[in-house]
Amino acid sequence: MPDTQSTTEQPQSGAPMLGDHLAMDLLNTEARADGQLVEFWTNDQDLLLWLARYGISQTATATPADLLSQAKALRALAHQLISQFRAGQPVDYRLLNPYLQAHSTVPYLEQDAEGTLRLSRQSTANSSGALLGPVAEAVAQLLVEGNAALVKQCEHPDCILWFYDRTKAHKRRWCSMALCGNRHKAAQFRTRSGG
Ligand SMILES: [Zn+2]
Image (cartoon, rainbow, N blue to C red; front, side, top):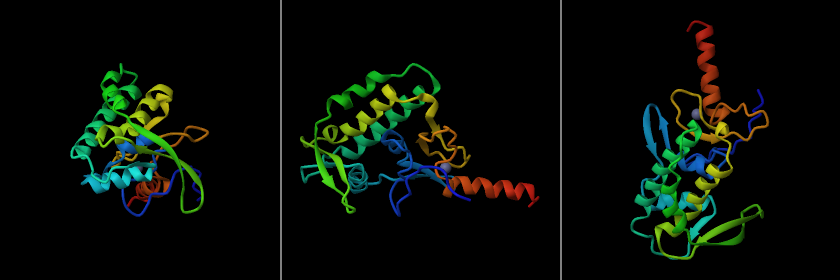
């Protein structure tokens, strides 16, 4: 059966990039597999690689000491704000402002391995806030421009991944058809065939 969903393929390692929005992929750095919570940010290196995949890098060679803890705090806050936004509740948006105001990056162009140009961001100050700024901005952008009805979590009961539904009919149900869509179909088939 053809997969009609426009999702990015999950890479071999690292957190899934299937949220179709950086703010969604931020939440997806925590996942669930076999009932266990999976943390994709276990050290600074994980986090720097994750940021690099979204075109965010630092000029300094020394990593700010509080980078990992600040990134996790931003993720927890994003979880709170996006959940409120999605539920139509008042959003504690002011809590995001310190992260936005610490934002200090410059845009630059780079070419990927296939020769495609992309607009990337490089921090201009050696602080965790400077480097995490573009991530905080993505969360702000979702709250400002996003449609709360399109902020969804995968419908599979064992999955906690988030995505922004950019499909034309807005009927996306799964983080990935290849993962949870097929798991669901297999479970339905087992039910129907009584096994
Ligand atoms: Zn899923």
